[in-house]
Image (cartoon, rainbow, N blue to C red):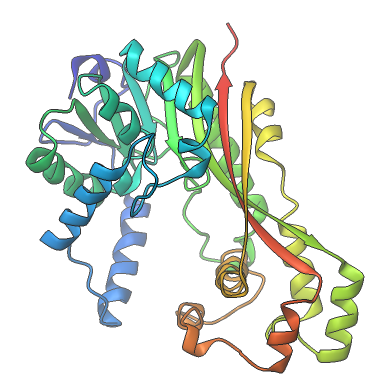
Length: 346
């Protein structure tokens, strides 16, 4: 661990392996272990193999600000944004230590920055200890010229001192920082997720120095709809998309009216220097994929253990005449990638 980063942690880690700091999250580890056990039972391979490492390396090599196409990390909201390119180049050129949160296997925005300046001290973080240990092996084998430090912690309670960093970055870091899903499905709703987002945003604000910046790409979803047409459709045909009742669709639409990122960032105290949105309309297949996951995640529809994952398979979709007609039933869904540069006031 780079001395600059080691000194900014507020407490001793539970474990230090290969110089990386691990602040263990027993509840998360148990949740992951249960998921892996379920995957193994279903015959899904969970081992990282050389082919997967080669895929990561391919993504790493292709991920750049001037790249037209990559396997994993291509983001129009980053690579096609003058403001994004400008701030990423600024961070790299200044060379100040920075932290990327909820980095996952793509290493978030750190990938773009360190490729511009291999010597810049980067702290790449995630809540998954297993993932970080795999990343360390990958970095030691393939990326030895970069100053990439790794740490494991929960973004809802970062073990980092106040006012420590000039820059914190993320690629979907806040949206993926929600706490463990409650055992009671009735509690797994938008209000719990919103509360977790506020905690994570507040933590990013806290660890930044006055005048520091949080640079993040976050995703959200919006929809265009006519609730009256949805009601008329369900009244005539029974279920929208051949699956959802009117009440369930109304719950979906209500959940999508959650507080905007802009409001949440300003509520935490940030000054918003840049907000850019990239819209992508869902196809019919993508809409089905989204709705199955969204309704399960928010407790709107009970699919049964593992059932909605089975429903995600195209051969199991409800392709009847009602589902085909529902594509034009006055509901269009959009994925939005929002790029933000947020400043902590002096």
